[in-house]
Image (cartoon, rainbow, N blue to C red; front, side, top):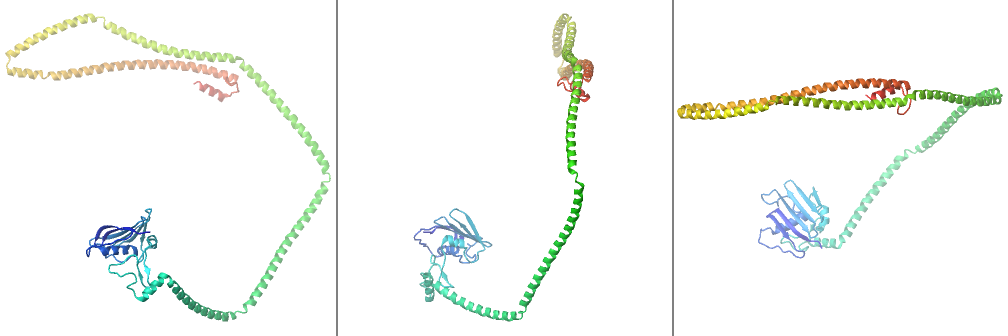
Length: 480
């Protein structure tokens, strides 16, 4: 059994927000007057029957209201109303939403079908709800007129269906009689009008007969055209036949010509066979001559391989000698620099003695200077001491000059080393360039000799195939 499980009112008359849980069997709403009991029934009618119309039931001070009815099968119907919007929301058991707008004064059929709550028609102009009744409203049909009760009971039993069927049948009979009379009058008028056109049947017969005659004439014209074409073709065939007869007379000796042609064909085939053999023989002789030349030129091939091998060995030796030469020059330069350092260090022992003597003298001088300073400190006044302190402040600038000189000295030494390395690299570069130029000159000479050798034999030393000038240039360029 389907029943209402919960009712939710928002801004509906006196209800700001109310949730009402309903029992499946009996529900009693009690309370003082003007507390919203009737508003609950009115809210149900508003959702289920779209009554009353308008928006006067929106709570005072609010712009919209809504009433939601939730059934025990989780179907939910929500009615929403504002000053500009009037909408039904339907949610099925799965939670799918459907929105209805523009439904007028009736309830959308989908909502009627899913809620199964609708009014019962008492007669053709009056209906009533057996599910919901207002406060102080009498029991169902008790307060109605006898005629209304009879109509309602007849509708409940189903008698109204027979009455409606009889009324509709009588109405249909009257309408059919009127339509029959109208059709009979129309038919009589049409027959009179058609009598004026009786001659049209004869005209149709004449038209059909003329149409048949026209078709016969058209068929005859087509046959005539075909016969004219056949006559022209016949004349042409007769002319061709005459010409063929003349040609047949001229071809009486055709069999003798065929024999001569057959004989000539056999002789031509023999000639072509002999000519092909002669050409093959000539090509073989030419190939033998070329092979003899090739064998003659290839007599010194082992010597050429030996020369190429010697050239490769010499080139490898030259590279090793260049490397050794570079290492030798670098070693000589190092030895010379070390010799200079040794020469400069011969008098290092005398320098050590003089350095020790100078250090001793400096110690003595410093002692004397200290004694002198103590004496001056005793003799001089505070002003002299102040002057002395002022003089000592200049030592900072002297130390700064000393540090600057040391930095510049180190930079000068580094620059001198860079200059020495630059000249050393420059000299090595010139020597290497001179050596490479000599190697290139020697390589060019050897390549010229190799080119002359390849030009003479005209044979590739790798694949032993014939080569031309372009191929020789490619081989020489591969060694460059």
